[in-house]
Image (cartoon, rainbow, N blue to C red):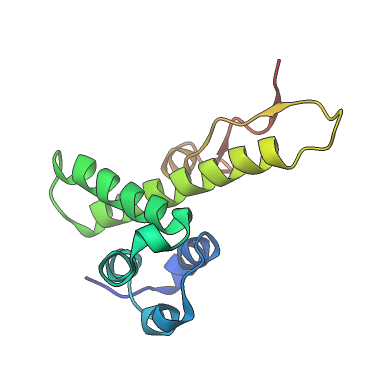
Length: 137
């Protein structure tokens, strides 16, 4: 498996910004591919004693990987697809949480559906957010 290239640096930051990892493991993850990082987290952290978000990322990864690889060969493009779907799912969950949890009293509700990087790339969109924030009912 390849290491990160410059084109992957945005996705590497997305993964890092979506998890709080204990410092004892964080330093050993530095230059590994995202899937290697997630597996190392799975293998070295007692998820029941740590933040739920670590468990969520590991579970998302394993579920999405199983789904995609049950239908396709394990190629570089499949690895990229798995990573994008994991990051998009985690980011979607975080956005929905933030919109609900941190709205000000009296502020209108906003509905957010999903983040989908691969679909945005196919459609040559400037944004990976679908739909962009819409006023809820």
